[in-house]
Length: 94
Image (cartoon, rainbow, N blue to C red; front, side):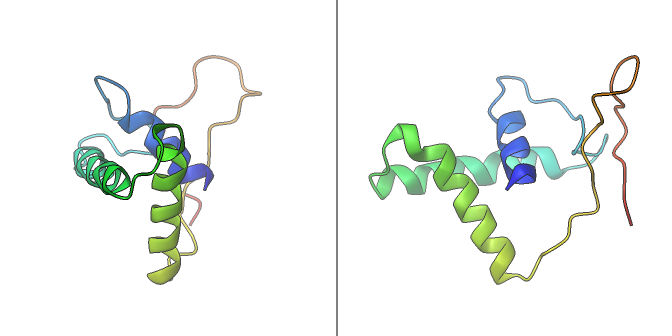
């Protein structure tokens, strides 16, 4: 859920840019933005209140991951305890 929430926040920015967890030069960000727009349109059709739309998106993606048996994403968040700017390179754990 943390990962999905992070992706959702980045997709909601007016000018989404590739930073972790998105890979520079990859196509995942624009595809994800379109997918989240479609999920939001489903929320409108289902009469989900606007205040609950983000939770609905997270629930849909989490449910899809469970159905597809995706139970590991090889990524970890940047640590806040380091000096300097956070890394802009995705850290893979596998």
